[in-house]
Amino acid sequence: MKTNVAVFFGGRSVEHEISVISALQAINAFDESKYNIVPVYISKQGKWYTGDNLLDLKNYRNLDKLVSEAEEVFMRPEYGDYNLYKANTGLFSKRNPVVANLHVAIPILHGTNGEDGIFEGLLETIGIPFAGCNTLSSANGMDKITMKMILGAENIPVVDYVWFTDHQWNGDKDKIVNKIEEKLGYPVIVKPANLGSSVGIGTASDRNELVEKINNAAKFSQRLIVEHMIGNLKEINCSVLGDADDHQSSVCEEPIKSGKFLSYEDKYMGGTKTNQGMQASEKRIPADLPVETSERIRHLAAETFRVLSCHGVSRIDVMIDADSNEIYVNEINTIPGSLSFYLWEASGVSFSQLMDKLVALALKRKRETDRKTFTYDQNIFALGGGTKGTKGAKGVKR
Image (cartoon, rainbow, N blue to C red; front, side, top):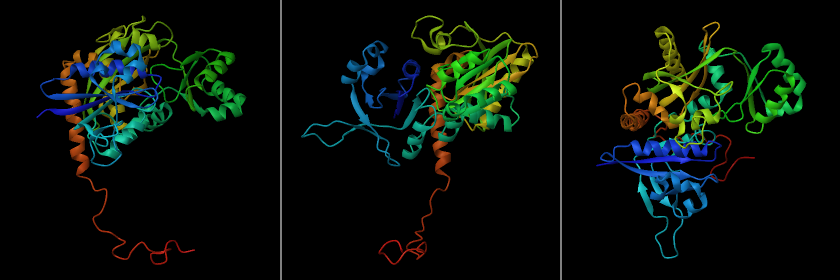
């Protein structure tokens, strides 16, 4: 019997289009003899759709037409109900018939409302096996501030930073600017704390630029981070596959940037307007590094994955200070663009094998989770307990 796999993509995120590209790449990599793939597209308005028309990237040029020709669907937030239901039914139709019975879910949702733990929380509520990080590790990995706090506590090197909220920024800009200048100096790099794909990121070499870039970043996030910017910088990426207790690191890559840092266009368009996702970016694979440097990066990537309790496939981006040869972990992408399949192909794992591994990891975690105790069979109310502060069955005692 084939495994019914739902691939969720799109979403209410500035990385919506990149999610679509990554998901269609993954769907095409599945072995059709093993899996029935159910595409579930989440629109920019948050509605869910399925249908064969979602499998052709050209159809996304007209989103209104796309969703009008697809089937709107939903899942009930009920533990153990893995069905995908039809949202709209006719007057004489069966109420909310089942469109598909799912066995495994694979979220390929980049950025907010998908990669940050929000969607993962829904899947955990339902109890369906799913690939990738759980709610906690997704949230910690997505938020650059929390991530750096955790890594720093575990002696994983990160650059110096200052963080604050947009409310704090609007309340006392001078105080925050002074703190940044005292702790970090210039140049610095300004980032929204919980976005990926280089959205909202900017560099500053003086006070005026700093204020401008923070104001821009505040358009995208309530939590903001300013980091010391390494002058002679080399950026290296490494992917990790598995779970926190059993994982492997890929070969390293060196992405080629067109400016001071990797832009959205560098990452997803190869500097041009293509639609091939992260695989289109210019890169060197494997990165031209000394063996000991490459192994150090692979070790730091694996430790980052382990410390954050990650699962599935992630990509860890590190920075090398070419002047001092110091290596710093920059960030983790818990649902990386194109699922970093090109790094695994360079490591001897085909895209099809990568998808097999993600499904197997999802089922393995479900088996392990089901062995844990979450509730007790005993009912304390039936035993007369838990009634303090109440009066019989009439309600709360006042």
